Image (tube, rainbow, N blue to C red; front, side, top):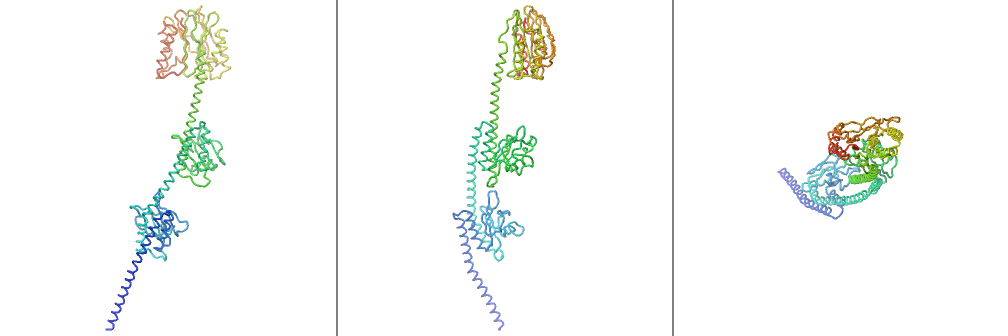
Length: 588
């Protein structure tokens, strides 16, 4: 009986103890809930304060860590690049990374050895902070005091704390993004203003040297650097066009063209000098203590390099800085192209004026009106292929009513040929009528051999007409044999004479004679007539010259000349001339 009573008393005691423990837990639960609610209110108040974000995040951590008895913690915030970076931390190991390597998860995660968050930042629990189903931050916690694990109550609190922090954290992120966007916009406005001012000044630069200096000065002022160099590619290779503050080997002569092409081949964007391929360009820039290489690209070709030294503050060049330097380089390159085009235009205008003067002088050497010779009619034309040419014709009155006829052709075209032709024209004028035609041509040949280079020579047909005797005495010095067309339609050539003038110092020349009857036509032409090419490259040739002369045989010298030139022009077509054209027609 006693044993039964004792057993009942034991059961009664145990039941009473359990009821007491339940009462204690029931009494403690409201207290815990009140403390948790108080902590969450404090957390929301801190995060919603007007303090700077960094201070608010730090205060929020100080409110959370004691509540769960964590030894350390960190709040990671989402950054524009998509990574998670520490916004506030307490108690992390020295040298711990500022970014979270673990990819954000939609729910709480326990991390252990092998995870960077555990090994380097000392964290064991990661609680995501989510907003609109997007992870915008992570609350990382270290071990609890005493080493106890996080229980259900602590994890539930941490989830509520993360939910409470989501709104203010998102607002803080948006505020930071707006501030960064505002600073970036202000910087971009400043850069655009500087680009506009620099572009205006560069466009106003008339000389290439002033553009070089302005580009280097603008870069140094904008980036606050003490060294800058501009290298431009040319026929001699890559050469220093402008440099300031250089030390060492910034200017030791041009980099050879082959090495220049290799150095610039892969340079399509601004690049750190240390990242350039090993070669003369990199070594030269490193020797001059230049750290950034900006290519100056025109179309698909890199025309130079703008090299910039480091900032005194040691601040690295950002992507925006590289974009600004490249944009400024493009503006400078466009200004250089414009300056070069302007220089070419000015040179062209000057050459045009000089050629116009030369053409006027050359035109003044031709006879102004046909000669008046009893029983004969003379007409001539000379058309240079360029502004001035190397063909010439002349008729020179001689004593006794005689008339000297001259057609000459200098090898080559343009100004050099016209200068030599002017000399030949003056010499023939000075010698005409002083001696026999053969002797005259010999003297002229010796003069040209002594005064002109061997690459220059002259073909010449010189004749003296005696109208009373109706006899033509002539010398053909390497010229196309003139055409003589009689009333029977037969074409005979006035050949013989000697070589072209200016080739052989001791050359001798034979003199020929021809008696002209009424109606005879003598035509002297240059190779601009016989070698005139059709679009299919076929030459006009002797036969077509003869046909044109026969077709106009019964007409005046001017009409025969006009028919011959018209035939040549029709043969050549729209392609135009390839050589000077000169023709002289003597009609009996």
